[in-house]
Length: 211
Image (cartoon, rainbow, N blue to C red; front, side, top):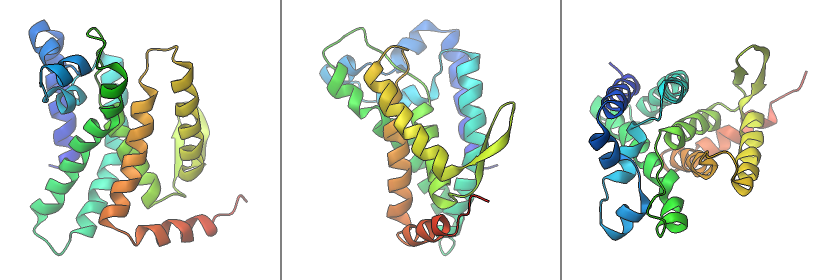
């Protein structure tokens, strides 16, 4: 079984358990105040395995499934000269670190607000999606009910602009900065483990034709 599927299963189980146990929910949700002042450091990665409801969970896990298997296989290719568990460990580490990185800004912004809380895998999923875009920028991304796909690199640029704009608006209770920083981390991590991906990305972009 792939690490992507294991993450999906673990996230689903932990989310459902938290919905039925308020103590579990409040212990593992991300709270910058308790993280910073009470040293409850586990909250940063653990919050990525909790979701607010079924729609939140299903959307994130479907996105992770569609993009995660591809990215995980790329890790296997990069680390093919090592034992299989190495690429699996690196991919899992990538995902967990992405959860943390995507929410670090919340510590700076909200550490003095005791009631602020956040949860969800959106930041880590964003990292996986953008890692996929960086690896194969011309692959098209499709939206529900829209039959025409958008090349990944165009979608990526539009999405980052959208996240930055919505973060400044701050009116929908969505942590858009987590999506933004998760996306940047996803790209940066691929470049870290595979510097040659820069040249590959550029070559693919230069080969793109609108028609």
